[in-house]
Length: 286
Image (cartoon, rainbow, N blue to C red):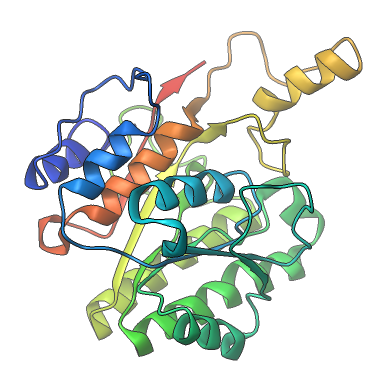
């Protein structure tokens, strides 16, 4: 898969005078690279993270607090925040299907950037197609419309699930055949195309990265590649894990910290430096 990790991100970082290496070796302070990005610009953002209690939201919340301060980020989701979570003091309930509620939060919290993580993932989506259409498509429409109205920057992640059996297997370009066979993949293609439309029609600063499977300590949430995380939980809880893949099967993955770095750097890049609004990004395969 063609990746912006080593090319677009490093070029964007160069514009910000940030030293980005190919390998993300963790320093003594694992958040140091994010502080370098923040220090390279005078901009101080106020970020709304939807789906904030999912696999990536809480980590990105920590990153943005570290970069821009405690009041720089607000998280939302459709569940009650854990009472024992010390990192969650900036959270409220938000139904992504309620556009008016999104808009009120954007105005009240002086939001300038939305990271839209709310989605029903692949395996869960196949079990409830109608709900997946509502959350993954109507939710995107609401976020993009609020972003257009209030001139916000908006990041909506996509996935390798937006490809399909007709997509080239090796060195997949950013612009390629997309014929997904799951409702999750179909909804992500819709998000990509609608975001591009809003960019060209209204000038909305839409940005999107197609992620591989994300490796983290968070319990699996119904994604296709969640076996790579579930295997450890099953080993501890059941003593074994039965994997549905052949021994010679390899799938692209990415560590969650590298995923967050790609989002932060991508959003920090000047809009004029981007040749398109959606890119592939990858880490490693196993």
